[in-house]
Image (cartoon, rainbow, N blue to C red; front, side, top):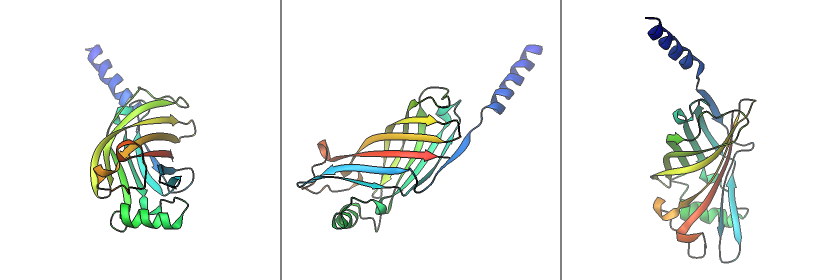
Length: 188
């Protein structure tokens, strides 16, 4: 009789000890979404710090984590006003599709994730861009700092035609109309 009671108490203690924490991604600061492309004249980068979202995570159980990130694509800046206007109006159609979102459905990686120890995880989720939603798995490098912040970085490619975005002929993006995207996110 004592063994079943001990197992129940141990399970209850483990459940109480393991806690999910809510982390918030706020606009500005060190949060950056960026991309790289090349046209017939030069290469260029676009970026924005207009990101927001949430991460719900328990370092003892990364598989239970959830991530939701929203990027204001209307705030992407390439450093050239005319190029920004054409990108926003002709290709991204930001007047109709002003944001890109990613919402996770699963997380895989090492268990547990220790503070100040980098970990590589894979996050599978639904990316919505230009009004089209596609499931993607992206690699994420994550560090849980001792001060209670999460720093997550990722680089992945978006195949623009999959999202109904026509790539201009003068843009020499990577193979098969893919644009490399980087996210550098801090969440508290």
